[in-house]
Length: 381
Ligand SMILES: NC(=O)c1ccc[n+]([C@@H]2O[C@H](COP(=O)([O-])OP(=O)(O)OC[C@H]3O[C@@H](n4cnc5c(N)ncnc54)[C@H](O)[C@@H]3O)[C@@H](O)[C@H]2O)c1
Image 1 (cartoon, protein in one colour):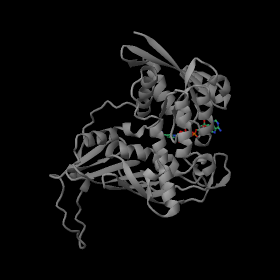
Image 2: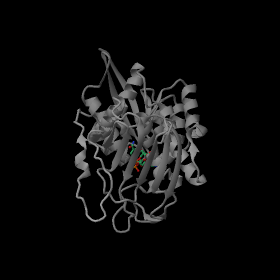
Image 3: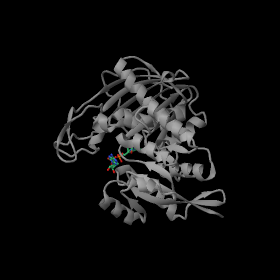
Image 4: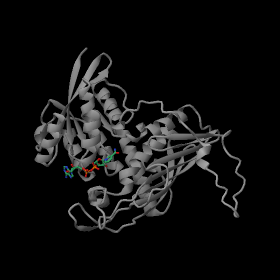
């Protein structure tokens, strides 16, 4: 058995998503289990936490027994570290990835991998030009609820797809009475904010991963709170959307809707729900749980009663899909795939090109909303 150590620079290490999911729930557990099995060999990650705040970095590094630096250039010139991962705020991604590629590092990137598909293609060209490997974080397909949904689709549970519906969101406070639960950069275009750029990359790989390719999209965007209070208590203007209502047509002709909002109060089964209807049956998944209704279980609804509430519990007409776990942390699944790709040449589904298509979908939504027409995804390829 050979042990391969892979040095990984984690940029934006102290940020919310990097410190919790990527470090605490993915890379540290892999390292503490003695590394990741790849054939007869093991891959052990060595972590270099990079960022701007020395105090925070030192504390995080101490907690997780990692190295740290505020000198990104020095880390990039260190040949012991062959991988660069970016999970810092979105606006700085392009410049920092360009730098890491120029330094010859393999790239793993949080979404969105770029602000536009054109920018993403420039990065990909540079990656390919240098013979580097690159992947994108596409975590949501590994949520237990969506794993169950994917398995149903793969077993042809649905038959011919009739349509789908994705609903996502919750209420994000504007900071006046209650502090906002999302960073203020999420609400500023120049900082890479906007609900569509933030969330629609996820919806792209979820939809196409489970149902097949999308053909076109039409969208309406809106902003519920035009002003908000930031982390320092200062008021700022919001110049991005916080709500998106979107209609999608798949290449197979089925149509789906996506409603995503940071300005909606939750009265559904989960923060994210995905329903698929088909000629043989339907399924409805949240983050963890999933329910199905076959034709045999489908009630013969004929009309509604104006006179009287029929008091039917429609949810009881669905069967819950058994938990065929154990399920791994979705970010850990991504790291395992990426590390096996780097060290052992395993196929990587969530490669950089997939990350670009994720961005392309967000771009198509913006274009459609701006022009007030359908946008064909092929036109943007
Ligand atoms: N895959 C997912 O589900 C998921 C979830 C949340 C966030 N994200 C992505 O991860 C990234 C970070 O999001 P977050 O919610 O953790 O944000 P955050 O605000 O909590 O963290 C951002 C980090 O970037 C750092 N940063 C900001 N500007 C920088 C600059 N100019 N140079 C270097 N560092 C800088 C901040 O100090 C902070 O450490 C975003 O790109 C976001 O789209 C992905």
